[in-house]
Image (cartoon, rainbow, N blue to C red; front, side, top):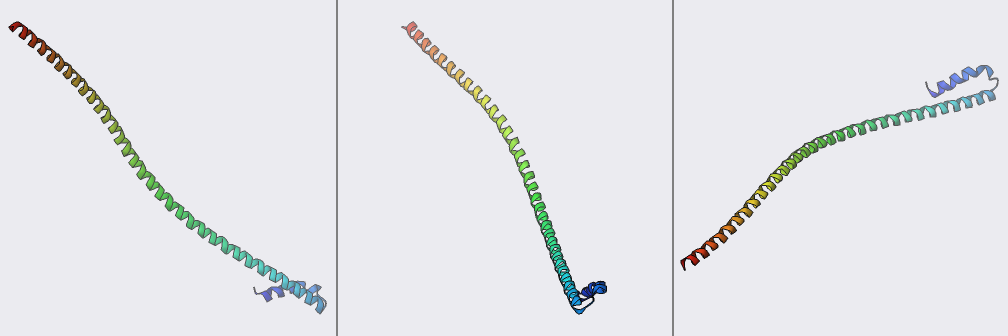
Length: 138
């Protein structure tokens, strides 16, 4: 409905109470103000609706972006979790190898000590035997 049609509708509804041109002019001015206010209100409502729609579209876009980032984070988490499990397994394996190496080193050290003791005992025994032979042959 146009602005003028709205004014005519308002004036027609008030025609019974309008008696003079001055009253008609006042009523016409009042009707114009009412229509202008309604028009301003309608424009404001439309602008608010447009802004609301723009905000909805922006929020949808941000939601899609957040979902995309979340998917990337999930992929990174899964990759890091796999890497962590591999490092954990390697660490446990290295720990076991270190324990076995330490045991082998202790055995080797004991054998070295025993070999040195036997070598020392044999050296002392050979010296004693040499001395005894030297004394016996004199």
